[in-house]
Image (cartoon, helix red, strand yellow):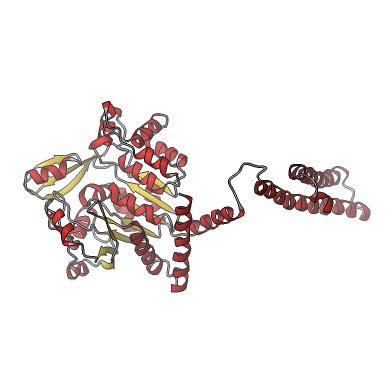
Length: 445
């Protein structure tokens, strides 16, 4: 061993590889001799055993010492690999933590769903995001009309939320062109459109993009059918197109009575249905009630799977009402709207925010005929839905948003306590490790 210490690291690795090959040769030679000659005398049996045992010992030594030599090459800079023992340890630890996390299915669309996913991915890698494909406005609507593809916008946001990529790459994929024919079009949408062009279907395109961006979990469109969202207003008029529904409801001063989709029997992805049935928890929202959450439930296989699953079903209530969709709605009215379209029994718990917003923010929302959603506990209880209270909002540019970390902590704590029956000690340890994971991710960025 003293002589080996003086050898150059590169030569030392070659020596261990040669020694390992010798060990394999011993084992193979013994096996070939045994099967060819079939001699079972005591002397030959000892000879076979000696060769095999010697080969195994030599192979073990060569592998262990070879790994040490490779690590020495890395540490001394002979190999240009940005990896050290600390980073390797963190990587192994992160993967082990995430793989053990609960199976989560998140259903919705819009920015609300992607915000929640950014927080949940630090607790589990067993995530399936089921995303609406009813969008027909903005850049997504333009690509849908021009290329005949499903709208990529909400899908793109969820992929980026779950991606393990550099901030610059995310900034690039979220970039919107400011001039020309591509004005207001997202580069990420174009990327997904290109993937769709070289794939057999939209689902495969989403999978390819997810693979390129190292996504934690998976993102699935709720259906591959060309789904069109329609609404019947209380005045009897029928509105077609997701982007038109709130606008027409405002212009006609008439609330939404009922949503429906065409084709009526749109087929859900089998993977989405199976994910719901096998989940530990299903989370609905957050997001626009009538244009992000409910459209997914109108796909019959999805609502049927929600009724059949043993998963814990949680709905994340909106913080503020939305003009043209949920004017003056209370929390219970959000639940009633979901039950009306998908049937009773698909919500066990509802997560509601109890943190008050400032008068300044209230006044800004009143300009858009919006207000903080009121929590009417008595009516919620009558719907057989339990309330989970928490403070999980943040204010960005004077707009109220869900705080991804606070919301994820509340949801994961509820899932672990109510569904997985973890004791408090395990829950505390799990959240401590998850916090370290977030810190490690932040240090990389």
